[in-house]
Image (cartoon, rainbow, N blue to C red):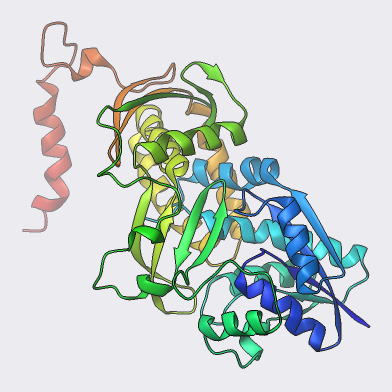
Length: 391
């Protein structure tokens, strides 16, 4: 019997994929990466076997995800189109790496995924697999079967008595990990209407959030967050704690129209409290510790880095080269940033660093200024000289 390794999430698509592959003569072995999913490992195992899998591998990859993937994009300030912190996109190359490893271990020639032909994840999985294990053959049931929509998938699952949570009233596609939740489909496809209350997963609405602000002090060492409110905390725990605090303060909701890799514009809802808190604090610390020209170039790197992650190009030479630049400049990014979280807003209130380039005696307009203002006239003459010459 042909053996296939299926990237299994426990959701509607991959549950249907398991049955569909079995019907075509495959022995299905599932792989689930525990990155902070909505399903527990025991529930995933139960659902996979009920769906027809012969075996399932479940690996807790939260530590690797946090230290090797999340941290890289945090240091790079990588936010796609200025609004998406790449929560789902970041998990795909990590999952692809383990799919390839398990395929070798199980002597399987096929990899399968439950990604739609309209989406980004098919690109992220398949390009990563092509780079890591080019001899593996890839099966994408959603591009091949005749189930034309999620409503038909639900009917298929019910017909075969497959375990699903999706219903006709809540037809969203959801992906969750510790860095954020992605929600799409259903009522969200009507861009003329605001998202229904049931389309948000765990972040409170600003209307019901507490009236008092939550205070958070983050300490970074060479670009890595190491303490919260003076307490040393591992990266996974720190992210989970910030998710809780941010969700209570209604921080981290994003409703955007984004450009998918395949060229389609789509509406997506994201919830990522910890990601936005950390990105805000980290960027503020960079502005305190890095010089102007480095910051200008970093903006270009950040945008390109985000595109590479979004487009499934994690395992590329360009991404490795950008990592080298980012890691080099992080040597100065050490210090503390204090934030207030209030009804969806993140406000920076204090910052400090032993590497601060801010000098009060130069910036002050009060007594004690050491800036010689007479030098400004000559500076302006030189600064404007190329432009005067154009006249």
